[in-house]
Length: 255
Image 1: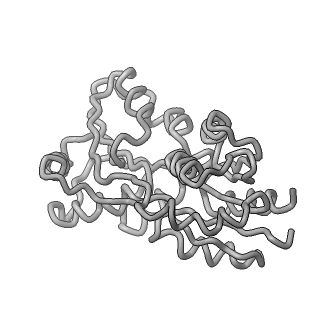
Image 2: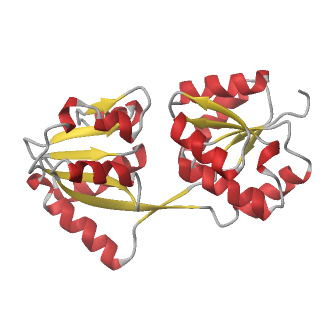
């Protein structure tokens, strides 16, 4: 389709490589991050993170929910733990998160297929957790079901909330010129439910209908959220790895 563009919506530090990958498909790429990752800065939030990092050796398991969680947590750990404590089991939501940990010399158990909390909760390592102290490194409010279920299984769950996920303040106005020319032929790929919510806000802010967009999302949960928001042209990738999302973008382009 001659007027087709592909929107790249990942956080800025992840969007550059994704834009290069999409450009190889031969279509114009709209570089428009719809997620801003901001490390916590409020003094109370910073102190809460510091307290948990200082107690890092008290946890039986530490779960990292994303590459962003790895990046922010490792920055803290470098300051307070030149050598990581022994006897802590590390668990990653998804292969890329596990790879980010491996780059820091941390071996982790991982969920590799759907890369969501359901898959992680099915791992043998998280079945018999009664009385265990588990730390979940995440953004503010991320993956609530993971901690809730582990608590129901008898674990003592703490959250190390390292960053906020926000809609970039200029996103609505930055999207306006692209939306003004029409986006029915475009393909927009979002890598998370939070990014999906931000996309809906951007479309609403520009008076556009969700029904006209060809949308690529990772997994069934984000698909269900997209349907509730009014999107109808949805292509579901198996997970949020770049390879699976790229395959789904190719599928969307063929429609």
